[in-house]
Length: 559
Image (cartoon, rainbow, N blue to C red; front, top):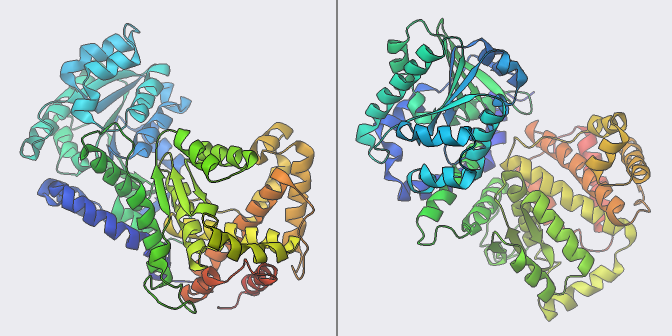
């Protein structure tokens, strides 16, 4: 069994490589990152006492009087987490009050008008000067307000000016503490939940001021995605840590939940800085640096030399094979692009569906990524797909006659088994790499496939996007295939969506096996690099490579 330090290193290596670049870019734009007020927060929470489940966190919340929830403003998951809490019926056994930093106390009358239904969403957004005075994502904040209103919670603004001057940030803390104490006097038996910027929740900041004003009040601090705690939790033996107990005293209880990775957190902030730095900040953010940085993280993780002139143990001039990145909020450009590049109607429809479901898609035949919305899991997977294609010299590139002529002979000689296992292999490496960059992505294991037989017919059709009979046949194939010794196992005689589903799920299962083998030390980065370099597009290679990989992974020996 790997030690805590080794597990932490293996789980974090690729992410730390990619994160270093993002942090450098943020530091060059935002000079406040090193100020003492922010350092107080980073230095206060560096270790934890034990691992918790999210159900433990919710139990602690129901027992508390005041709950301070840390908000990383640029990260939608921060606001969505509190919205999910407000939808929990268990919290509403007593009155619930929500206090938010986002809205100035001076604008309480505007918020009250919205709560009474006198004004709509657009007027609320305009009159509280959300875009001018706050500037982060409105839909997720409005989702939070709506969740509170829909479940009968009272809502109050807690902040005051000036927001831009860190020298006056202590005054804002004192103001917020006074307003929260005022809420306690008005709502003596309520659960008061407060969403405030994470740096305000350092022990000597807002929590200390609240302790002064309400010395008998049981206060719970719920942090989110604290860097030092996340990296430390990466050393736990379980796949994913949901939450940890940081400290627990009589009236000062501190927890931390994890719903995003540090890379995801800082990348969203970089995107906001990019948007604010452009004159037309309503346009779609530039997601090119995001994709290139994720690819760079995997390149460094695998120990690849991007500038190698040969194509033996290294891809030849990988730096010249990076994809084009389209960052757009409208799909009209994607439709025109696909039509112009000769994609079939069915293929165009499939890719557009992927964009809606995933937020992005890698267009293999033209080596381009179309990003409609940044989602860490999807973007990480697309980045790995790009890298896998580039490591093989972009064998599927078809935007030039020379490339098409070069690729045609191989494509014609691939039999059905090779085509199927090439797809499986590509899905496996993409899934593996996405978990390396985003370890919070859930694994897919054999019991997960078997459990699908226990769901209702409607749920099975929804989860597989297949008619019931096709779904059952696909699951039967997956279960039987995974039981075999996989020596010469033929490709399934499926077509269409059923074929795609089976290839994808088999790839995800194999990708999980790869990840487990790497974490356990049975697979080295050198062996992984060889997998990325294997030319599975050549006749006979994909089937053989899959058999060898499954044999190696099942044997338990070190590669």
